[in-house]
Amino acid sequence: MRLPVLAALACALVPLSASAVEEGWSGSGELGLAISKGSTDSETVVGKFKLAREDDTWKHAVLASFLYGTSDGLENARRYELFGSSGYRFAERHYVFGSGRTERDHFSSDEYQTTIAGGYGFEALMSEETKLVFEIGPGYRWSKEQDVRVHNNEAIARGFMDFSHQLTETTRLFDTLLIESGGDNTFVRNEFGVQVRMTDALALKAGFEIRHNTDVSDDRRRTDRLTTVNVVYGF
Image 1 (cartoon, rainbow, N blue to C red):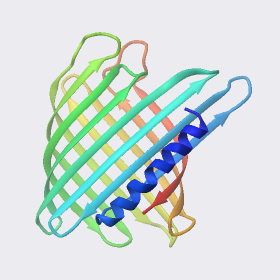
Image 2 (image 1 turned 60 degrees about the horizontal axis):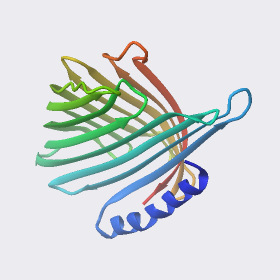
Image 3 (image 1 turned 45 degrees about the vertical axis):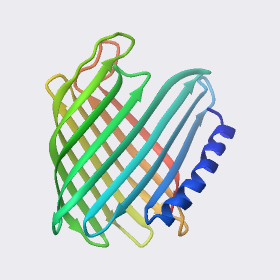
Image 4 (image 1 turned 180 degrees about the horizontal axis):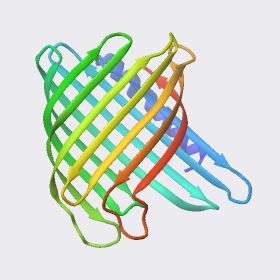
């Protein structure tokens, strides 16, 4: 995936974002590229596209993301994720939700993990400066091991936390935590970082992500770490 392809993807998101604004949604698209030249030549591209819409009764969120990497011309990372959720407010700061997430990773122990979940959400803090939201509930996960026809399907418990705090007029701190825990495997993902607004629409985002699976094959690591610096376009 070279720069011309990325430019085409970015251009494709423009009409989508314009349409979303007309429908009352808000969102952002972000893109990052890391290139290393020397004894090892490597390229890593990451991207995300988010949409959200909230009113007094409903809250909706959609996320699409990808990661693609090469080292010395050989592909060594390729992951895609889609996520969607809807919540219904039954009281101030309290809501019930349903969510779905699917992830396909060509270089992990599991070729894919797909989960659905529902439960209770609580908006602990919702000021202009600070946001803190918790979700918890039961769910179910379908997964398949890489390169073999072995499926591991099981009931799970899902926990989620979304925190952000406005440090200054232009700088915002964020931390999101997702836990999907079952008898065979517990998946944990935490992303922590800072976003600095450069203009009304553009921002620079630096993040550190940790992904952990308790059950992996012998040739895989349980924990992956990813540091990114992305340009963010908000609408």
